[in-house]
Image (tube, rainbow, N blue to C red; front, side):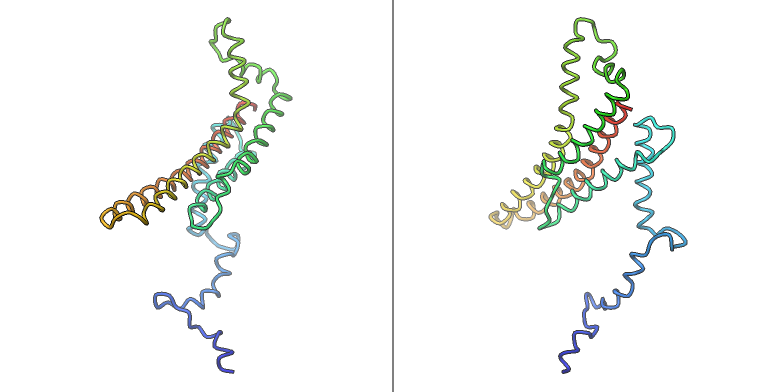
Length: 224
């Protein structure tokens, strides 16, 4: 009978720290911020970049007042960035490295922009097909080129994100496989190269989310 109740003893320890009593403080971590007198450091770390992104996206969209439009692009960037970062952990599926995920995000955005632009701002959409200062002879060719570039926008958005994620993971996987067969003298150099590549992938994961959101904002500003 004594062994039956030993599972409740606070015996778990890591680096001589009793971790059992941390469960009593979990509610303090998930408590809504409205019950705190001031924002904690985690809220400040997340709110500062979001406010900066909000100001930048407002400038890109030529918005005098923020009516919540930028929140869609900020949340899109955060979702892509967190998916990219989580994919760097072992045994976690990277959904943004597949066209099924990236096209699902890019195609509805582009379709909604096009439907809004051609129904509400038809004249402005026609003027975008011919850049200012184009010679009269080149106008038919510029219309074709601008139409093609407009139609491949969702493909370029999705393929750019997918290709960057696949390329980084592929290089890390190939280097990880070659580490098992290298000599002892080459092992420290391979580890340093892998650490540098991992830092590069961390930067790429953040930058790709930012690029996706900024390009979507620019596409939205053209039809607005």
